[in-house]
Amino acid sequence: MKSEELTDKRIAVLLSGGVDSSVVVYELARRGLHPDCFYIKIGPEEEQEWDCSSEEDLEMATAVARKYGCRLEVVDCHKEYWEQVTKYTMDKVRAGYTPNPDVMCNRLIKFGAFDEKRGRDYDLIATGHYAQTETDEEGRKWLTTSPDPIKDQTDFLAQIYDWQLKKALFPIGHYVKDEVRQIAEREHLVNARRKDSQGICFLGKVDYNDYIRRYLGENPGDVIELETGRRIGEHRGLWFHTIGQRKGMGFSGGPWFVVKKDVARNILYVSHGYDPATAYKQDFPVHDFHWLTERQTLREVTFKIRHTPGYLPATLEWTGETSLIVHAKDKIHGVAPGQFCVIYDAQHHRCLGSGEITI
Image 1 (cartoon, rainbow, N blue to C red):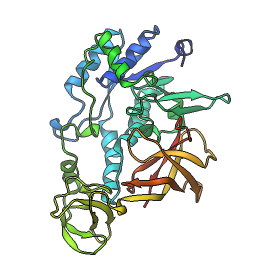
Image 2 (spheres, rainbow, N blue to C red):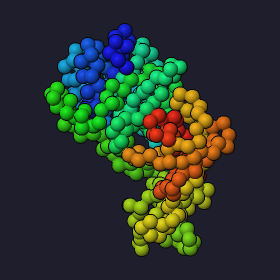
Image 3 (cartoon, helix red, strand yellow):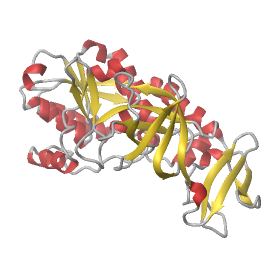
Image 4 (cartoon, rainbow, N blue to C red):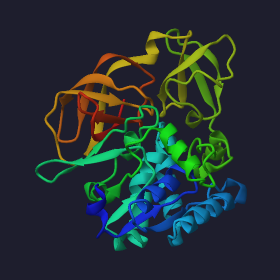
């Protein structure tokens, strides 16, 4: 949005303590705006060391807000996070799927629970996502990609509701990461050289498998070579493995690739080799497809199934109102049920929406 379009808007900034959201505050402040800043607390269920909402994060967020004369308020979304996002994650993992908690965090927490608690008092909610928006001649707002292919985060936003997209503002979405770092250093922001957070935010320092073990425990079962039916070992629980996994398997005679899970029989199927054909798929079904702005009739599209820089060409075959089959131009590695397939236009400019892979 242009500066004049923001002048009369009430803007809330989700300030995390990281460099991206801090530059968001700068971008708005340089336009003469003084948004209210909010720090969302979504810490651990119990142990303090699990908390990614650390004192350091809050200290840096406080320093940035103070630097630009903005008010900062802490909003506790701890209960909502663990009841909604964690439940989604555990339910999917238990069923043998590969969930994406960060996707649901945007939908349920950053643009969901926060809006219910404080965001409802504001016209726009600004975040540090690397994404952009555009409004067409008919007044429809679309989610569009960032010029930084590595940092682009439209895939993490592809499940938000249309009303959430209408309130979303991405002030740094037109930058690449290096430019954001340069701005932060030039403006002497306290977190200019702070490393980006890695992994799932709510886990903090905790290993993902340890986290899963804490809530689901272990459930040993057979590991079978798909091609021969030969038993090669025992797994400790299907939820510790994902389709396409090669590292960290711990079975002798490798390398092994995870290619299939039989949840009913608690069997993990693997294939031998560095790049087995069974690790690839070219056609796969998607259900519960969610359109960001409105339904499209495009057949030729591009897509992603994980957070990577590349966009893959495909054609879509609709089998129902929200169900479809993706026919990729080339075979794709590691297609796993539970992953979100994010659909873009053929030029991978507009992000149209996403649905869950069901194979």
